Amino acid sequence: MGAPALPFEELPFPKTHEELALLVLDGSGSMAEREPRTGLTKADSVMFHLVREPASENPRSGSLLARLQRSRNRSSFWLGILAFSSRVEQILPPTPLSQVDPQSVDFDLLSRFGDNTAIGRALEEADRVAQLWLAGADPKLPRFVTILLMSDGCETCGTDPVGVAQRIHARVAATPPPGPARLNRPALVIATAAYGDDADEATLQAIASRHPGGQPMFARVQTGAELRDFFLRSISTAA
Image (tube, rainbow, N blue to C red; front, side):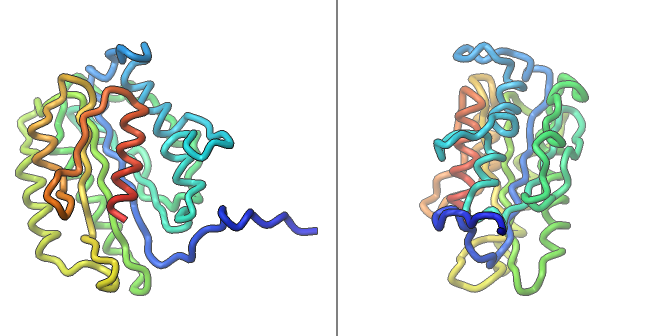
């Protein structure tokens, strides 16, 4: 006998497009500070709620990765991960979600990074990765990217995150959206999270894309769980 079929509510939707969730994570020294609510370092809390947290029967449990992997749109998702401090490192190139092994992306966010924060450089690299992925689209499957950028500090390396974001938004606005008009979606959006009280809210809000009503795709979060939930909302809102 073959494997039992999934319950109807768990069957994936037919694949009509592809979506890249591109995580851009701050790995600067301040991520070693502890969350007041949980006692975990910010770095450990982020990795737990984005990658490590196991799923249970509760559909609202599990890491961001676990929830995407059981989404009905799971066949459409790709995942990429960048981490940054004064430099930027690609942890996971854009990879179909079905091929992402949680253990392969469970890394120490602080181990290879320094004390400084180059948000502009990280955003430039995220845009470069996104553009290469968008360029590889199948003509029959439009592609969309949500850049999900988190920082708990401010720009300290002299790069220009707002200027980089303005150039990205201008290019996106001048480019016809992919796919049929009914999708009514830009090819790329940026969602930003200010993690903790010391993050530069003004800069991160200025970087973020806008919802149709004008509100930025931005949130201030205090825990890794709040960050996960904001990233999930941002992906579903962009869709």
